[in-house]
Length: 196
Image (tube, rainbow, N blue to C red):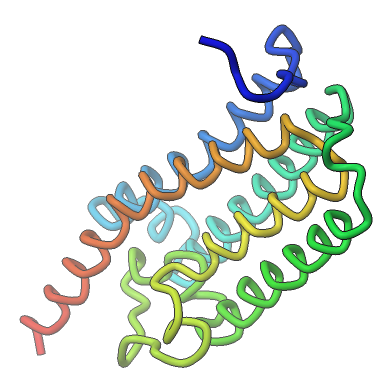
């Protein structure tokens, strides 16, 4: 079967695979560690409080995110450009995607706070109620949506077909993560309501 476009991605490039590994690893890491903490309270015990444990995990997640973004950019820079994307309107669309994505990420952080953003509920740091303000009144998982839009915008700005493929991979990984996170978070709050 012939593709309707030329493939501008070198699958032999180690940077591509390393980027995919970091994209896949990050949500796997924070889901595994957060559930482990919920069940065993290891970080809480080692660091002396749930808040310190959450700050440690949050700092680790943030650092891994920076490293993932770095590897994503290295992968895009090591791959051929896609001339189809050499259009001014596509460049502007890319910047618009980043602006929209970062708006979702930052307003989500503002609505959730540090502990809400970085899995504080797994440490027993629970919110009083479900957040329904913007952007949670539009998207169930606005941080994931915002992050995906930022990856898309970067791919368009760099005229990278590889970036578009990696963005799709990001969306798939985040979708799988929400499949596990959503029900487990609901379970945590159900347990809280049973205790009160």
